[in-house]
Each structure stands twice: as structure tokens, then as C-alpha cells.
Amino acid sequence: MKRLVYFDNAATTCLDERVLATMLPYFNMDYGNASSLHSLGASAHDAIEKSRAQIACLLHCQPDEIVFTASGTEANNFALKGIAFANREKGNHIIISSIEHDCVLNACKWLETQGFVVTRLPVDKHGFVDLDFLRQCINPKTILVSVMHVNNEIGTIQPISEIAEICRERNVLFHSDACQSFGKILIDIKNIDLLTINSHKIYGPKGVGALVIKKGTKITPLLHGGGQEFGLRSSTENIPGIIGFAKAAELCFSEMENENKRISALQQKIISGLANNVDGIYFNGDLKKRLPHNINFCISNLEGESIRLLLLLDEARIAVSSGSACSSNSENAASHVLQALGLNPFEARGSVRLSLGRFNTEAEADIFLETLIDKIKKLNSIFSVV
Image (cartoon, rainbow, N blue to C red; front, side, top):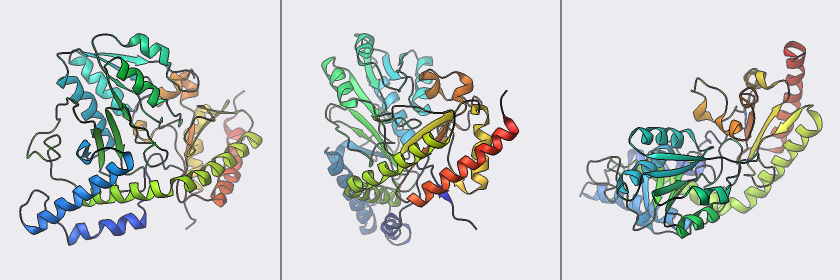
């Protein structure tokens, strides 16, 4: 069978073999419950704490500020709901950006049914939050601002250090979803009170993430039980997952500089190839202040055929996506991110997202460009718009 060209790393990455090797003993040898008092349990507990310390070192925070979860979605829900209910006596106002991940948007919709007021910040045509408008929106009842570091669809990198400074000046907690940036670019967590990270975007296992909670932050747990994770997230810990998460993070940080140079070159090769060979193409998001792993584009008059194009590419063993993987279950296929940038609903249904990763090559970029150009010709001859 023809080898798969996988350009959907923002949805999930394959497990690095070095990560798998680190995890394997914890499935069938060191399989103890970290809460057990016997030696096997103590070994599991020590492995978790070592992993916690590894990730803390990479983020320059304290180990006991890291709470492991089952996903980035859980961590985001924990941050939003936990802060909301723990700080309700101070106020009921939350600010998020209009291009947050669905788990943040939907968590906030639910919080609105519980008496909270949510302001959704607009973004400019490149996807950046207006900092002056943010300042205007903060009021005495504001308890939390949540703005993602890197957008999962268009790769825009928000100025979270500046946002964090604004929040600190106004005595408002700041949370950032860094699932798309962690392990890919450096994150300055100074003045950031809560940070969401996860594993399966960085060549680690699925089913594990973490919420970094700065000491002194008042937060209510979502899960109650045996008191694991400092009493903040009860559940038996996913020990192999946590081990793999830490190893994946360690590898990403140690290889980050060289990897980003290589990925940036691939990104520019594909963008140039698209710009020079595809009529009517337009790119979504800022082409400079974006994650080097991300490319998002539409083709004028073919926006309605993006899903057909993805299927044709899939037949050719090339995996790309249209928008966020987590939004593919929605009845409304129009991207809320692209609509926030100013695209109409028809255009917002027509994007193609490439997300590059560790195992992609120049040869794969050439295959993609050649195949895409060929498939577009077929679409033009069959589905042309008059």
C-alpha cells in the first residue's frame, strides 16, 4: 500500500517510538496503583512525581503546580468552571476570545446557564485579540480571562505575555490553552495563573493532559473522590500516559530549535508552492506571527468543495483536515474561527488545514503539492462555479 502522507498533526500526532519504549514497563511490570502503600504502589508514585518534576522544569514552575488530567478538554473545563465557582463571591464575569477551542466555548455557554456573564472578544482579520478592547472589557466583576496561546485552526500566536500583564495589573486571573504551542515554541508563564497542556499533540499518548495552576490560585475541583493530584483531581492516575507525556515533552524541548527550523522551511516551501501554482488561493491567519507547523487556506469559488477535495486527497493517501478535528462532529461545518476573521459562512466552510510535524519530509511536501494541483483540476472540470 502507498505510504501515508500525514499532514494532520494538529489533530493528533503518532506516538514517538522513544516515548513508547519509556511507557511499556508501566503497562505490565511497574503496574501498581500510585495510592497503594506497598512497594509496587510506591514505585508508581515515584514515577508520577518524577514526570511531574520533568514537566515543571521545562515550564519553569513548581512540580506541585502541575495537576494531571485526562485531556486538554478536561483541563480547560477544570480551569473555567473551577475558577468560576471558587471565585463567585468576587464576581461572575469571564472574558474569552471568539476563536477559542470548542471546549472553552461550550464550557462558557454552560456557565452562562449558571448565572455567569461571558464576554467574547472579537479578533482582527489575522486572528489577533485587540488588547485595548480587552482593557475596556475588564470590570470589577471580572474574575477570569481565557485566551489560547496558539489557535488550532490558523496557527495565530497571541501575545499572551501582554495579556497576562494586563490581567495582573487589574487583579484578574489569566488562563491560556497552550495545547497547540506546548513543546513547539517557548511559553513564558510569568503572570499566567493557569495553563492547559496535553500529550497527544507532541508525539505522546492520548488520554493525558495537565492544568498548571499557580500557587495560591483559588479553584474548585471538578472530580471528587480519593484525593489524588493534591486533592484537585481525584481518579486513579494514568501512569503509563503520564510517563509518556513527560518523555514526549522532554524530547520536544530538547529538539525544538532544530525542529522549528526544519518545519519552517517545509511550511515556506508549501506556502510558496501553493501561492505560485493555485489560482484563487488565499491564506487564513497571519503569515508571520503563526506557528511554523500550520498552514490554512481556501480557494476562491471552490470553498464549497473542500470536503470533496479532502476526500480526493485521502484517496491518494494524503491526510489533511478542514478546520479543527474537534469541530468535525458539529452540524454546522462553518468554522467559527474563520467567521470571526471576517469570512462569510460559505467561505468558512471551505478551508484546508495542513499541520506539519516531526516525521514530515520535503519529499512529502512535493507529493502534496503535485497531488493537490492535480485534484483541483478535476474539481474545476466537474464542480466549476459559473
